[in-house]
Length: 360
Ligand SMILES: [Zn+2]
Ligand SMILES: [Zn+2]
Image (cartoon, rainbow, N blue to C red; front, side):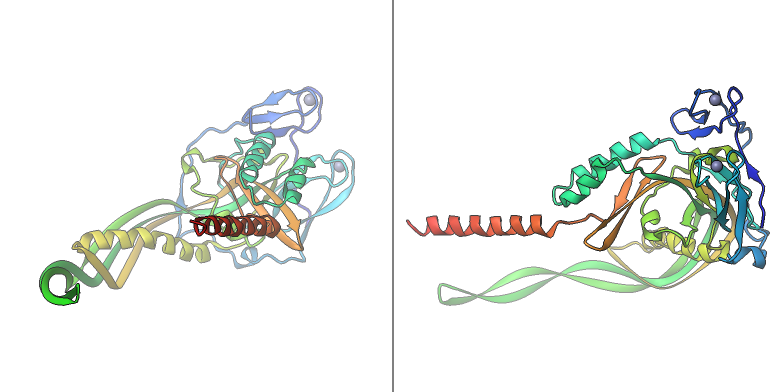
């Protein structure tokens, strides 16, 4: 397939402009000329029931590539079918292509944290981890660049009504007599003991949700992306291709219906809290619940993420930095040598203390 490619030529020198997180505008890397991204209009959600569900466009056929040639140097290249933007493999010119999915991105949180600031945040985060292996610090010092990605998400709005049945537990106290033995003599004492009285409870609770965010990519570590939130959905803007210039980006690879099941789980936590408050008492048990979802709406969103990966002892460690809030997540690479040294140090210290205290 040959998609249309979109370029953002600098009005002064003709080079490709890149989206600058610091300026919030397109900027020429050579002459620094800026162009604003025209972005009038309100971000809004769309009717979930009426979302286009085109089977052919929902399953990504990995054999379908986007065949392109760079406008600047002419080198031919292929993008994966789901890939929205990247850069020329030869001259690094940013290339943005058109979406192919039935549901295109409609809104975006543009990067507001640039490469430099993200590296600082990552370094501080890693630096505060004393137990990280020195190879990790070395990796950071080698000036490896973080990669900027826009990852696809679904945002859901839904009103809900849940009917439930459960049990309400109320505490009460009883006086019990116990026999205690003191100085070889037994005697009876009276103490208060807590008991719970359970009674049947049922009812209905309502909860309305807005912008429940679910990660919609199969092509990156989902649990890492899930832990990058909360996303500042209030700063969503209408999707414009200019925001992608200079960044990698993908279309969704998990469909709108599958992700809504995840959204139900997320909403379920809040609904359970409401049920517990509705039951009242000191403890609650939820035995059954039935939730009805209505007025469901969605947004197809792109969120900014700086990524880094690091291989150590044959294991891949992945990191992600929220490109809007600066939150850093990832598995900490523990140095077992450093931890072992600490543990041995503690054991020796305890041994020394008990040795000297036994000298008395
Ligand atoms: Zn220029
Ligand atoms: Zn090129």
